[in-house]
Length: 393
Image (cartoon, rainbow, N blue to C red; front, side, top):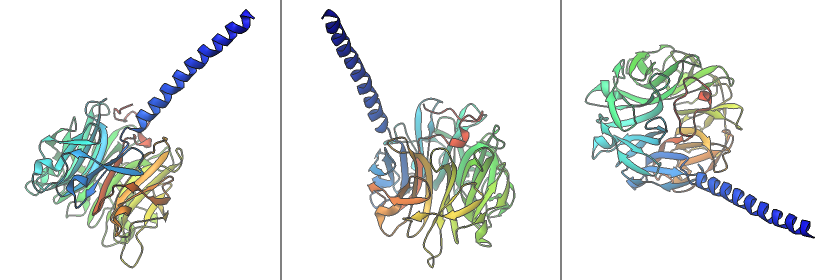
């Protein structure tokens, strides 16, 4: 009898311990799901709604604090010091050019950066390193007063300085961080150099820039991303406007310096946004958004190798697709989010679970245009790389 009583009490104690353990686990999960995983920027009739955030990439809410009076153009996630999370957004504030670069520690409440800013507008921003270890942010934009200030950099994402070397004579539009060979850090920026060959630039430290070689956009580059062509070989893909040959609206490079033309589907008018991720958590995928002519429905493209492109299915934008990103949903499953312009404002933010078939988000959206989107997930192509930037756990 005593043995049964002892067993009973042991059972009760074990049950209590297990209950507490799983309760804490569920609380941790709930807390994690309350973290902002996505931020999107764009333009809205209510300028406070030019920066939105989401905890799952599907349902969106309005940020607080400072916003862009005109429009947000680009956004990225990283750290301020190698460990503390930071979001940085760039855009156009016609009331105060210092407010063309904003930052947020939680993705919800935004503040104004210091140091140099763009006199007209910021268009793109990315997080990486200056030497493979030290955190670095790079922003591309339009400084009508000084073209050398079309590419800026910051060591903490809050205080900005001017880059050196080559630059865009008109404006910088997109920027990304990756490697030239899988190990050596590399930055690539795209924009409008007005000369053609200088529409794609590269930098080994994010501070001093050079002009790329090979094929280029005849008009301007709009977006660029780093990934792989098959899960192992490094690859860069850039999208832009080539008025002479629409097939050249999507280019690729194996080292980020010398560029070639992609095959398969392309955009009739221009490619606007590009991102790398996976279709199911393991198989590599690229997704590009852009603009077609009015005679054809707008499309979202995908590619499994970054070189040959196909057309996605489901919902698309009635006008332009401007930005796309890869991340995770509330259950840590792979998710893609794209932003753009649609006659139905709610359809300015779309999502896809595999990058190939698209659906409409819920909650707040942009009444005007969605221009940029980012997640808090490290680029899968940088995982395990010596060039991977410090990233929040």
